[in-house]
Length: 475
Image 1 (spheres, rainbow, N blue to C red):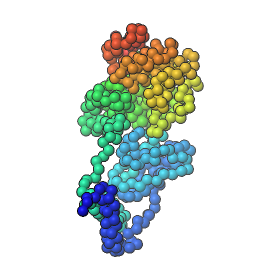
Image 2: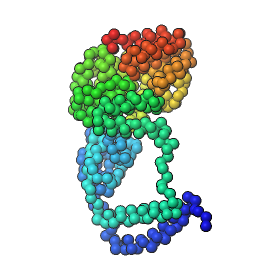
Image 3: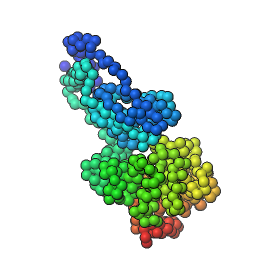
Image 4: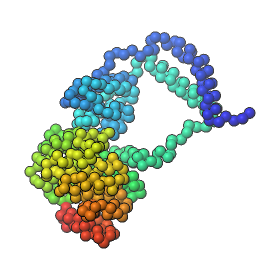
């Protein structure tokens, strides 16, 4: 008698399973009768308003459904913490906004206290407390389901003689999967040890994995966010400040601090006071406030710029606005929507900005273009030809910055990309790559060494950009 292959074994297993199931179902279900059906005892409804969730906290039993009804005038998006990944309770996420007048339902199976927020307005929060209880008869139905699941597995194993297939190792090794796994490990380190351990792990990882290097800034954003959640104190979280990956750790702390603030404008005016005005950390802190303003306003660009304009000091205003535009053009249009981006016009909304903001706007526009057109750095330089006459160089500078960020391990490739631009684009592009190198390392030394490795024709622009940052480091 021949052996059964996997497909034939599965067919034989399914046939035997059906016979056993038919023979068992009467014995298992006959005593249950009508009393085993789940009886709805009133669905729990949470009203989503433009001011928050009503009620903010609800208590239900395991298996109960909560209806999230949008009673406001704007779209809302109820989703599990943590923002913006929604990993606290996988599945508790409609994956898109709920329009005014519409609703979304979710059945909570897992007992526990589940915090959630409005993804469109992360400072609006709520919680669902799920008690460890089941409606009458539900336990028996669960047992029946478990019985048949185990029965089928046993029969299939008997015929196939082998274990379940292992997870797809090829998929697990994809860059996105590696970044996702690294994020989970880093946040676990923050919670179980401290942010220093997580940042050291990330620094080590970026030296070996280009996928982590490219995602370094958003990863340290998340480390900073979780660090603030752990300590609940800005100063305590800042004890672990590390400028790795363009100071994303600081930005994450600020975003989270502002999302929990009772008076955001007052906090913004004092949060960066511990850092000397004009210093590197002072700039990064003010820049981080721009990220935080966008986080707080759910990517409302005009409102965020108004918050930055409240600063009386020009250095603070410009640094904050720089962070606002960086956040806008880096916005994930699936997870962190911005109404101030247009796929058909990646330079939008720069032409409509006040003159004082146009330079920063055009500087970050290539970031959005490259998120839509992966690796098309030449196309990004061509995009800059469409910028307003006085701001084409700012756009080319941004191409150099973003190309360097995405190719930190290959500066010569970045240089060659810049040299493929039009004559007026080469110098600002080289300056952009040098600027990013300074901020990434939070030091001028590595950037000076980089300049020395460039073509002779590009060294002056590179050294000039690096030295222009010397005031930030007190040199």
